[in-house]
Length: 207
Image (cartoon, rainbow, N blue to C red; front, side):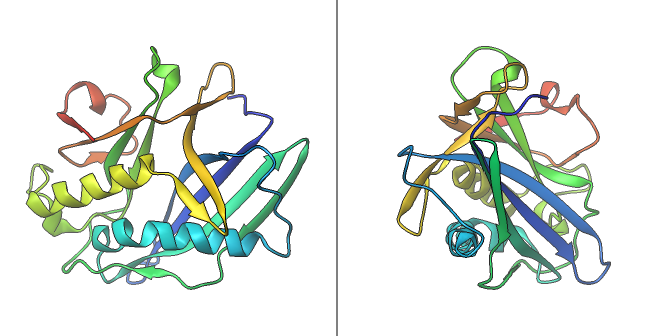
C-alpha cells in the first residue's frame, strides 16, 4: 500500500496485564494548518500526551480494569524525514468490570470519507472488549453499544494537542493519499479481526 508524502500516524498500544497479550490499532491525522506542526525528538512526546488526553474519555470505559492503553506513539512523516515518539504522561487503565474477550475479538469502527469506493474507507479494530459488552453470539449490549458509539465519535473527532489542531484521516490504499474522515460507524456485534467478510453480514450504525 502506498503512503502519502506527509502524514501523522498515531498508534495505540494495548496490553492485558493478566495474560500479557498485546494489541495495537492505528489512526491517521493531518494538521489543519500546513506549517503549524514541526515536531522534534525533544518535543514530540508533548504532542503524544495531548492525543492520550483526547482519547481518555472514550477508551477508558471500553476496556476492563485488567487492560490498558499502555502508550500512544506518534510518527510524523514529511518531506522525506520522520520523527517518532511516545507519550510520557501515563497509561490509560480500563474502568469496565469483569473479564475480557481474546484480543482477536474486536469492536469494529468504520471510517468514511464521503467518497465512492472501498479504497476511500477504512476500519479500526478495537481490542480487549469486555465480556459484559456482548452476549454469547457477540451482539453488543447497551453498554457495548454506548462504548462503540464513544469510540466512533473519537475516531472522527479533531484533536488539538500542544496548540495544533489535527483532522482525522484515512489513507486511500490505491493512490496513497490522505482523505478526510467525515463520518464513522460501528458494527453492532463483535467480530474477529481476521475475518474480512464481516462488514457485509452485520448491522452497522453510523455516527
